[in-house]
Length: 345
Ligand code: DTR
Image 1 (cartoon, rainbow, N blue to C red):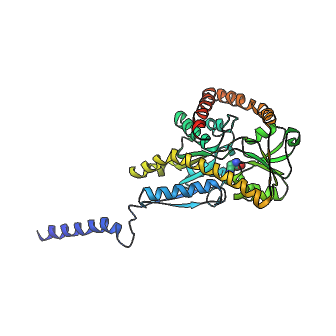
Image 2 (cartoon, rainbow, N blue to C red):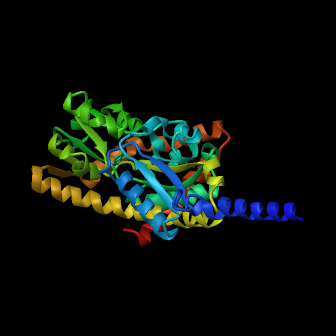
Image 3 (tube, protein in one colour):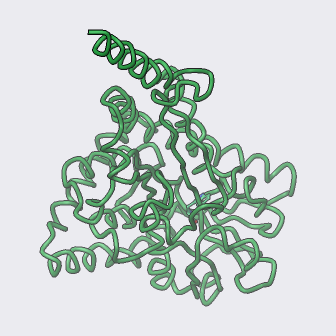
């Protein structure tokens, strides 16, 4: 009798240590807290990192501090082109990548690289989200997608004035991933590289400009090297924020719900942020560096668009070969663009 009482007391004591002890001052609330890492490739000042910090703040707020996320901007944990594989392998729990930096890899999403007529990042980001939900791309099957968005429309930032196709001919310009194909068709001499490698390439004269959205005139100080901007509204660059699947599956249901509820909201928030910020950066560059902004005439732009139109057909052909519904995806992208353009100017 004495023995069984002793064991009963011992079990209660042990149970208390294991449960209450879990939230004792030694390991405060460890059992309740979810700690995550989030990798990003460009510098902290740029919009992919600004959206990352906003997401982290929202998540911490909406989970009452239960989720803590440590962020790694500037390629300090994973770099641009190793982001997806790095997240799949668990090198970071979450990672932000530009899908267009790896042409041929995220095939279904490459519709976002085409001349569809996206007027801004808000519309493009919402279109991208809806297409993702409808087609559930095979190429993103190994991860949990937390949000998708694009940059604002690309302009030509250069060290010479470009008013037309003749002046663009053979100019060495950096472009992102699939943007290289656009620039070839327009007659330039494009060089593909991630945004994070551009400052050095510009300084060394490897390229004479960068075709990208205008936020980076300010955030990466390109206004210093590129005194001319041709307002050509070319492509948008699509981004995906992805999470390691095992880590996602280990999250409690209430945290999963917070992440899920934020997905489309974050897409629109980021689109709006980068559209507004591109305009701010334009004004800033005029004031601080006297950058000259050159609008393309409607006739000239029509010529440019005619040159890049074949990109759509070659995408559909590539998708047919891969047994994917390219034509339908393009039609949906156009219809969604029209729908969202009415609301988001
Ligand atoms: N235009 C794409 C994407 C992009 C636009 N702004 C930033 C800032 C940081 C990284 C990428 C981007 C590009 O040129 O890479």
